[in-house]
Length: 396
Image (cartoon, rainbow, N blue to C red; front, side, top):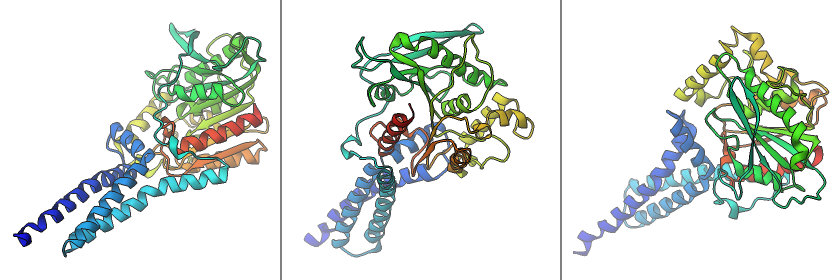
């Protein structure tokens, strides 16, 4: 009776090992392969940001497979143990790479923050203001003041943030970053700006709105405790492109009657800087994904055609072509495993800034995906906060 019952614990161990293996295997596929849809890309982003959790699953699968191996012979447990060991190593590559980057940047990482949640909520509400009406459309911005602001304080530096994403998203897309910017580094006043999101055939309308918002901020910053003579720009993705253009290019005219100030510094997160035909190719995963086809169609709609058909338009929207010695200090934050932007694009932009004698820093975060800052406690976000703080302290 003992001999007949003995296989049962072994089968249970193998089954449990397989159940722990499958999530890590699925996550690996999502991360490395072209996403079949937008939701799949979002799952891939989360899988990459929380890869340590998949490492724990793989470790459990490895232990269970080795336990089953001790209960009998056969290749199954050994193969399962090998698969889990490989998945364990692969899951640890992103955090290990980011830990090395943190050491190079002089940033201290706090593992206890790893599960601190997402950046989509924060501890207070902003003041929302209409800053312009363009063609009957109301444009708003959110004002985030320091939590410890006192009426007698000296004016605080100003950060104007421009979100990425799509038109239906709120201006304060990741408000936890806004309150961090407001409260850190001796306090700042943050203005998070909405804009017309690249209307078809009129991409420059978005830039005109950002330039309008900059003028509004210069005129009204003092009313919120901000210093109109110390302004930095920051933006993510499409917002990063817009702030680079607003900082490095001259036009177009603002979409409202205002004077656009020069800025003291600019921070661009995972943004393309070259849209011309000679730009680095888009990443392999994007080229083989339906998501990539949608992006290409969207890009061509907002300009009116391809880079070959409208070379001057694509040159006008390529910040790398507008850098000169008068450009403001620039921090580029690159996601090393970005579905949308090849890291070579930002490396070329950093080289162009250096060539022009513009103070700059290029923070390249290996094995991070576009919009990694959604994960507030993630290792990449922690490194980014350190580099942003140092950069703004030096230039704002």
